[in-house]
Amino acid sequence: MKELETILRDRILAQGPIPVADFMAECLLNPRFGYYTTRDPLGTAGDFTTAPEISQMFGELLGLSLAQAWLDQGAPAPFTLAELGPGRGTLMADILRATRTVPGFHDAANIWLVEASEPLRSTQESTLAGHRVEWTDRIETLPDHPLFLVANEFFDALPIHQFIRHGDGWRERRIGFEDGQFTFVLAPPAPEPMLSHRLSDTRDDDLVEVAPAAAAISKSIGRGIEAHGGAALLIDYGDWHSLGDTLQALHRHKPSNPLENMGDSDLTAHVDFEVLARASPSAHTRLTPQGVFLERLGITQRAKALAEHLDGKLLQSHIAAHRRLTRPSEMGTLFKVLGLYPKSAKPPPGLEP
Ligand code: SAH
Image 1 (cartoon, rainbow, N blue to C red):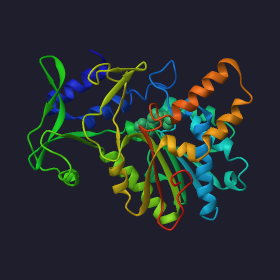
Image 2: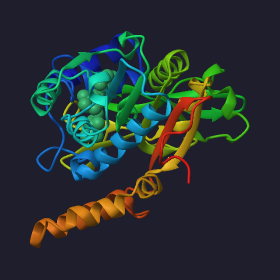
Image 3: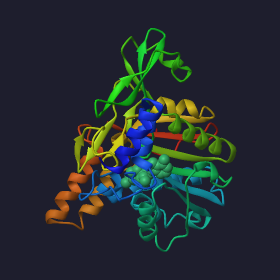
Image 4: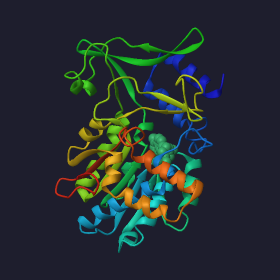
């Protein structure tokens, strides 16, 4: 048995079956054996690829949307330009390159990265060499300035709880250890205040997921934007409501069993955008499919301009990247952009026709 499996087994034997959230947190962020704490998981040699790694166009357009939102709010200075879970730093590098010519934007920006992984922090540092960047573990510690923030495939990595409806109560789906194996078990039914808003749209035996950590982070973003101005673009795969089991493990680009390869496979769940929106009631929230968002920002024109300098294999992969980001059958519909912005401000471009 690997060390992380022994840690989890001993914990379950000592305290009983644990919530999926505790299992995810341990597998992803255990300081010595966690998935993110011990590696760079991105790219063809890793376990998964993300939109900024697919094409520079993604970060460029997001950057221009944020910069326009900043201009629309009177170009406040100084302001915080933040990213949650920046991976290799590619998205922030593309944002910074695309906004170089926006007068005053770089001078006014204090760049903050919220990152839990040491190996990824050092990759981000080299990707963003030449820029002054600060790191933190916790969003709550960001300065009290206007907050312009992006997060791509960050919320899907935050721990979820799973519950199965039982009358007006809920049975938590937990992870136990029986007959020498990890296995899912159901806790006895109990009322669940976090899920009172789901009693009207679910039936007995429906499974719903909630991510208290995601809600807390969204709340903190919403509070910052309400107090100081700003805007946030949160991009992830998921839907307005969560329904059904979406916990998934990915190992070398292939789905695997979440109860195997612990600490060596990526664990994610679909994001329940309603929970993020409800957590920041003081901000306006708007949910748009990624493909629509990128088209409104002019991805096709940008793709054509870049294509003029390419041929052969590079041109083919550029065309494929444009399709992958926007097509409904690829990432265009499954991925969504949740925008948060002050009630008094215009939405960042891309969120409205
Ligand atoms: N945004 C990047 C990487 C996505 S992978 C991209 O689109 O390519 C998820 C990122 O979130 C990684 O950088 C991971 O280390 C970070 N992360 C996961 N859980 C975290 C947490 N609880 N706090 C801070 N960072 C976290």
